Amino acid sequence: MLQGKFVVLGVTGSIAAYKSVELVRLLKKAGANVQVIMTKSGCKFIKPLTFQVLSQNPVITEMFKEPSRWDVEHVALADKADIFLVAPATANIIAKMAAGIADDILSSTLLATKAKIIVVPAMNVNMYENPITQRNIAALRKLDITVLEPEEGDLACGYSGKGRFPEPKDIVEHIKVILGKDGGLKDKRFLITAGPTREPIDPVRFISNYSSGKMGYALAEKAIQRGARVTLVSGPTNLSPPLGLEQFIAVKTAKEMYNAVLRHYDDVDVVIKSAAVADFSPKNIKSEKIKKHNTQMTIELEKNPDILQELGNKKAGQILIGFAAETSDLTVNAHEKLRKKNLDFIVANDLTKAGAGFAADTNIVSIIYKDGRIEELPKMSKKDLANVILDRVMLLLR
Image (cartoon, rainbow, N blue to C red; front, side, top):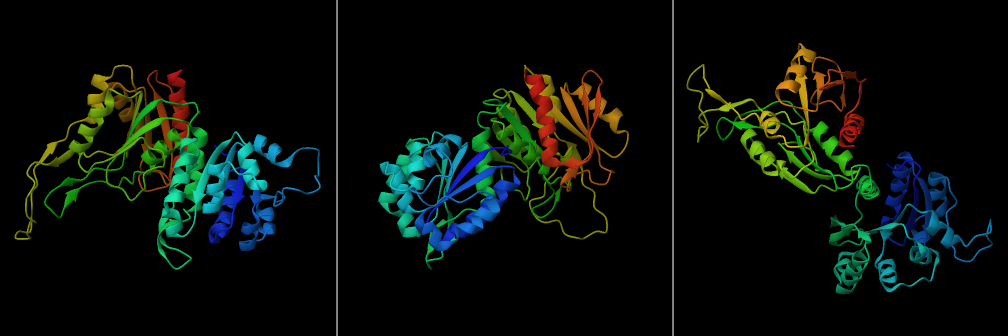
């Protein structure tokens, strides 16, 4: 997503400038070419040499200096930028941008660029909440400039409140979402399910499985970064919803997931059902905790609605992708599920293999197609696998 992209990073006079060092490292790691511009105040907090070493580019700090080549530097940078990031952004630079002031190298380059601009405010809570600052931020947003919300917490000035610099990794994710808006899945509507379901026995106990939700969340994240409009229906997980979701629907039980999925099914182009939904649930849920009066306990179960079967029966032009997690007869069982549930392809994984399965960050799968083809894939991260799956979906969308 960021490979080969030219990112201009403006660093202004905030104590949060030190966090931009990590931001440069992450951008470089993702394959971006980073050019740092620092204001005079920014140089007071951190030395340009630090950014020069990490970015592997000279840091620009002055408007008027002897040029190393024949171009107008701020215009040349403005033209080259794929994305223009101001992080941290002080109240001063935000005010300049809102007023169109160009009195230094950073503000001049910002005024000259046609690249997408992202502003990351970091300042004292009172400065941030000041009506003038809020008016300036609103003015920038009206100009289609993205202004990220600062975090709340203890601030370097001793105050507590809104004004903290977001985590650099979250800023990088925002950039990926913005760059992907014109991607190959632009405006395609995706419905993705993830995680386990929990079927209550009593107020304390439930039946569930080991699904972590990592595969479904990776699919949602990568689809968003290709421009898709994604609704994620998730059972209980410890994961944060990906940035850029159109809608996040949290559910607990199989019936809740069934209702959420069916409610949105007619409005989407692609459904990827990666959730591990419980096949059965207790027939009678106890209103109070069951006591250990006896050495044995019998729980009567009833079958849950088969979400994927219902989607296959109702299919009306949607692309429908399922998952099969098996411990034996993987290919036979996956083929049968593919046929019975009217899927376009199925992602089959053998839970007995090391590096595959629910809790791992990696997976080892086969993709089985309607025409009988089987595509064996090597062990890879779930995020890389998400990209492979989406590549195959894009072929079906052509």
